[in-house]
Image (tube, rainbow, N blue to C red):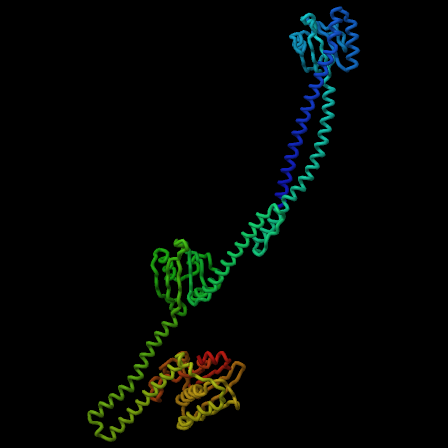
Length: 598
């Protein structure tokens, strides 16, 4: 469209200039020709008058007006010129076309007045005598220095005008031909001028649409500098856009990969940036939020308050909030957002989810309290009996023996707690995991070894241990750890099951790995306590658990052994009907083995 407009503009410019030039030439040439003809006619009339002047003077002197009339009539017919002789009093004595007696006195005619003044008179006017526009030229006729008459010659202007009209027609026809020729040439030249513009425009439109790899071709040598400059500009623009795009992608990738949430707003609290972590922490959907006001998106007053304060102050603002509904602890850091010129353009808030840290701190506090409590109990018991023995009870053999047995039991309990804590520590520490070795072992053999360890305890309560496992199930694992986990599960099943019941150990295989089920017919666990039974020192029935000699760390150890093997452990239980613990061991790949080993 732009190309057509340019072509039309160039063509119309050519056409306008051509028409103006042709009109000017036509008008000027017509006026010039008319002036030339008038000048030539004037000169011819003057020459005729001067040639005839001698004869006219002779005839006037002799007053032979009849002969004078014959002479001027003959010459007028020959030259197609009207000839008139006027005496110095204005009386017409001879005229080649009219009867002098019928003609008015010509003393007041302009050309006659000039002739009587001694000049060559000239005039253009309409003649009432012959009813035509005439060109008059009059010369004075002198005798002995005295003007005795005026000889006037005249030529009709109609003939000149007809000649001029014929010439103007020819000029107009030639002008029209030249105009057509100029239009054609102008159209060709216009297309030639506008064609490179069309190519450049189309190329720029392609570049503007995103084809930054496109380069303009050289339409002609006259536009070489322009095309080269445009190509250089596009090349630089392409490089800069690629650099900016690359940097933007990198920045966006960093922002979207950050575990911390990032929110940036402008002065009007409109969102500039909000990464995925911020969406997740605030419980927002993945809808586009950029450009919307923060109050439309975030309903947490503390966060909006921090953004408001950050816009008002240059200081770093730190605060910790709790986000419902799952009560996540989020640490906020707010500060102003500054551009490259050092001007404040908004505020930046970084959200860090510290829920796990806070919960770990709570677990640590509970762990310290539980360890202190668990260790204090046997230590207090031992200390009390030692003091009792010092006070004289050691002189009573039976009492002393009873006290020593209790002290031994408490010492064993204290030793079990310490061993279980060391086991947990070795499983949790990455440095200790590096020493864990995996090998291909028979799962059924490991289960049999665990059953043999638990068999005496089961026999004491007349509890049957039943195994249902295929022969030769080879798994990549650490046999001693799996055996320890199974011993803990089987011992718990035996401890919390009534006498004369059954415990079932089943192996279930699928494409992902193997699951070992330990199912009992015991007292069961209440539903609300199931999520916490794998925590350290957590007991369903604390008094009964201690009485049975448990440390409260067995299931926690089972959970960590499962994690070492990239597996998991879970439980289903019904109060009064028993519990089923499922220990899942996946098929370990080489990368899993290496990560578990290091």
